[in-house]
Image (cartoon, rainbow, N blue to C red):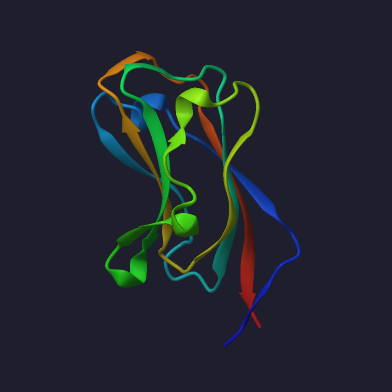
Length: 144
């Protein structure tokens, strides 16, 4: 069976409360985007970007973001997307009120698969991120 891409590229805005993602001294995995289970299609994720009106400030440690592929057909095994090119993104260094590209490439999501946002936060969150939002660029792959 072959899969052909649609011509349309879509962008899904995903808003997360910063307290969902950034909690002192914790590593948090938050589902960011996925392909519905039992879907008759696959999704090709092309990029993930982040924007915030206030960048987080961590006084002890850092706030880094890893993007992970969670493979539903492999017992929910996690792997870094892009072969590790989307790891340790420094959330404190993001430019506020600008769309900051975290990763660009190609990650295929089969039905049931998801992209996780994993945030590792230092011990003291002085200023949490405000208006934190992710933009996921994707295409639906149809069966042909």
